[in-house]
Length: 596
Image 1: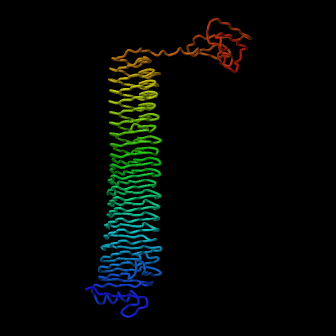
Image 2 (image 1 turned 120 degrees about the horizontal axis):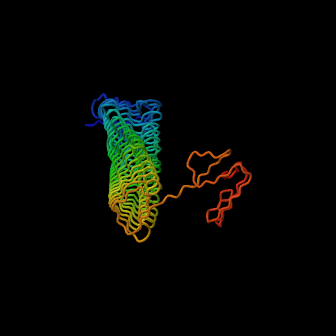
């Protein structure tokens, strides 16, 4: 049977004047006891051993126990329950509540730790916190087990809740506000957060490090200075049905961490929604990234996420893989961005499958050396302002089953890039279906371009094109155009339409099995301009000279020539009647560069 002890500030019949005397009496009896405390302020340290319950007789908060410095409640053995008390301490490094051994339950308790720790559950202990409030100090589970439900952690000068040294803690339906470091930190330990709300932290709101195991389920994180969620240093775990709003990064994964994230939302993050770096991994399924300030999904510096079924809407860049990173992206939907939907830069490798991009200036953009590669398969890119695909540098891009509709330019490759296209189509573009320039290379099989307002395919510079089994329908100006030193091969292709030219070529591209009813024209290069040689003491020629007219050692030379030719005045401008009347005076060179 539980023995009842009553405490009142003034003592009285059958009542103890302080809590400590009641605890000593209960300990001497050595049996389960209940200590009931009348409202008031008690300045003492409570040392509790055995099966003891401390309960406020009045409303929760009517009993205040405090000490100027150090621990207020010391639990060293047994099973202790505290209900409805307010515990106040200062400089309590060991904790205002210090649980050395046994089990402790705090129910409807308020703890205020000025410059110290609110509660410390040490190795081997078990602590349960329900409907309680912890202010100013952190709550630490070190090598212990814990259960936290419907609690509030406010204005901690450190981490609000620390789970460390192989501790195992479950936190449910709790709120964490305004901490100076992390809201929850799990380090080399296990924790499960469910239905919690974390806001106003100065570092990552929820942090898992040093091989931690962390599960976050149905939580809300908002208005934090850095990451909403962070998994680093080989941490593992899962995130389910969680929303992060107004954070620098929605979730940060780094240094070998590999969480599983499903059905979560990262909204209005100032930098990135999903940020994976420094050999971080992670599986992200059925997530939404809304209005990211910089990049919705970023894999950088060796990151390698796996992303499936995610939706990106609003913001600047959709998916970016940079600085020797990797990524595998399946069933990704990207809409309404101000920048690029998909970006692969700087020796990175990315695979995109079953992707849909709408209303973004660029679809896929690649840049970097030969180690920069991107594969885009089974994708639709719609209503793009600039280009559906743009590859530059020495990057390599493979497209298969890609459809680009309604934009400026379909597929483009420049500088030394390589673009491989198979079973793809471009339609309703205002300039052209595909453009290759510089020394870039295009290999296309079964490419279809329909309704381009200028050209179907254009190669310039020293580009090389290998195009086969392709169609170019209803291109307004020309189906295929090859300028400058562009070369290559065109085989088993068809150009249809009622206007324009089928092919305008420079004679460097082999036309094999071309089917068309439109004309094919070879572009003739204009004759080289006349060579001008300036000399002062006689003609000295170091190269072949054509159509040159010379005069020297003359004071005045007048040249007249009939015929319709362009006439240049001394400043180099043509007159309007086409007649020529040149005058060369003196043997010295004048300022317009006319030859003598």
